[in-house]
Length: 523
Image 1 (tube, rainbow, N blue to C red):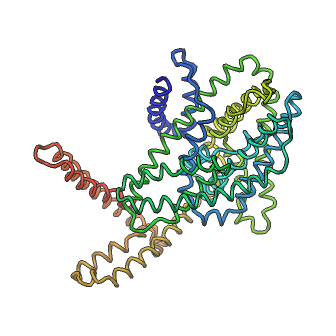
Image 2: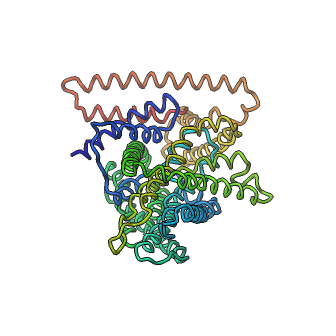
Image 3: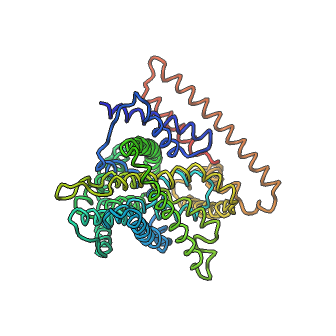
């Protein structure tokens, strides 16, 4: 019951913190972590622990799936170099650097435990990066690199962590066999993800209920993650592949389903992110209380490792800049400012804390695992250093660096896509037998509607700023009038819904049509 109360409290807290974050313009996941950590020290808050083995299976699948839905296979084909350099090689380099520092700073720590610590703090958290970096005015190419890195780096880190823990418990060594293990696990996970996407697609074709089809997308990431882990494959890769493949299989006629699914996943992602970061904050209290005075003796080693984590990422990004070749402008990072931003966004989060807490307390012979307390305390410190501090300062950093805005390029691309959609729509309308049966005036009205996708982005207006401004003002006024009219219509239907004799179901159908017209208004 106490955990249920904590869960409900975190859900309400998420809603409240989202409102606070929007008003003070700070990312709500960071505020949720800070507030929950502070609230956990209140005397009337009971001590509640969640099984560390449940943290990743509970929170990682839906959050990875939500982030992967915003990507595509084409993005990964375009960014495969960044994927290899950041999600695989940088994780290995960070693990090696942290393990070396830990082994030197804590002589009593066995090398496998030091490697486990390196794997714990190596991967930037995809949830943190998406939630924080996605809320600031960051160039799309930078955000795409961060998203690509964040979706797969946990897979490499988990393989290294599992190999290091096995070596620590058995008294063996960690070898290079982790690389083929990762490749085999990833390959199997890709096949499993493709199979799950096919199964969900077949299920959705069989199930006519729109809500049930949307719910299947929440079941899918949990199912494929748990199945992959049971088969000793990469659950992370399996979830991401499932999301990407389902996106590729999307059908044009599923517009209503996409609207429903989008709203559904907005709620799921917001609440799951809030609860996950809230639990991270609560667990940090227990780490501090459990270690007590020992934390003071850990400070030199912890400080050295935090510095190593930040420095390795910066040096890696700087090396990518210098080795970008003659086409550096088309590479990411393309400037020292971009190096700073990508380095500052190396935020650790859910995976780091979950792996640290999952570290065994004893060896196979029953003796305590030497260095575990240092590992857990260091993981918490790295989390604060790379998540809380950058998360609160990233908006200020973006303003200070004044990176070039690619808004114009985005508008140009959007205009090009809109014209492409218009062309296909108009050609289809001309060939349609149904359109041929319409009066000429109606066909012209339809043509005007189909030709309005690019409206204020029309290329022939770009050279006339005053005309562009007038068009924008007219369209804004039209939107305002339409919204006022639709608001009045909805108010009337809500009034009708409460009147005796009116069927609420029929009123709700009219309300839904009004809502769909509102959300499809051009901005």
